[in-house]
Every structure is written in structure tokens, then in C-alpha cells.
Length: 192
Image (cartoon, rainbow, N blue to C red; front, side):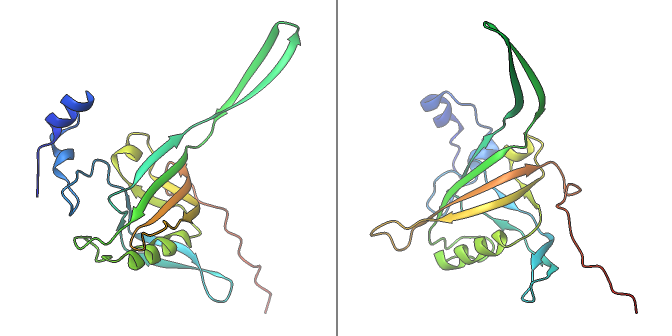
């Protein structure tokens, strides 16, 4: 189902949304305005031996219910030099602190085949286990020059009386590109 909801958003909320953005709808017919996709790549993950290895991940579009919040802070040092005088030194701007909230529900039209709540939760846990920055795609991220994120944690909640609705919250930090990676420590090889 495709609907042109751009006029509805303009009239109801005073918000101009491009027509192509209102064409994306969930299987319930509700508009999906800012889809978020973790992109396919070979990511560093922990293996069963306590070491690390690279593993290929296919793209994963987060559930259509997801919304993202962004917060950016400055590193400011304040020094009082007189009773009514303060000097503020701005050193840098932090990475974006990102919160992605959503919920997993049965989705018979999920394009990667994760149709049940359990399949979606398992896939989110796999992405959380990545020890690397994750390439991300979405208009809200592109507009802020965010190419990758580092997931800090995922919080899964339970709703009383709603066994097929599983809310989750992803907390992450931004990284501008895949070149900004974490420090990798490899054990020193013993001489033969």
C-alpha cells in the first residue's frame, strides 16, 4: 500500500515531508518516515575461544517503529577569574550520543525474513555482540555526517500483557567513518 501522506503532515503538523518519504509504509499501512539500516560488512566479533574474528553480516533494517534521538555536547572548561567574571574554554565537540527506541512486533512483510518477535530480538542481539563500529544508513544519520555508530548497549523491556510486543532501546555513539575504528590488541607472537 502506498499513500501520499505529505499533505496530511503539512495540514496537521505544519511539517513539509518529501512525497517519496511518505510512500514507505509498514504492513499496517502506517508511514515509515526515517528507516534505519545496519549495513552489510565484515565486522569484528568475539569468538568462542575468547578471541576476536571477522564475520560477514548482511544488512538489517531495524523495525519500522524505531525513532532516533541525537545529543551532541561540547567540552567546556569554566574558570572563575573574578566575582562576576568567568572564562569559558571550548576544546571540542563530542561525538553524537544516539538513542534508538523501538519495539519488535510480528511483521509478515519484514524484507529480510525476520517476521517473528523472537527472530528480530535474536538479530538485534547479534548486532549488539559486534566489537566494531557499525555502518549505518538513514536520512537522520546522513544529515549529521554519521556513517557509523558504536553500540554501547541494548536494553530489552517487557510489557505486561503484551507477549508479542518487545520494546528495546539502543544506546550508541557516532563515528564519522569506518576508518575510525577501535584499538585492536593482538597478542605478541613468541619467537620460534
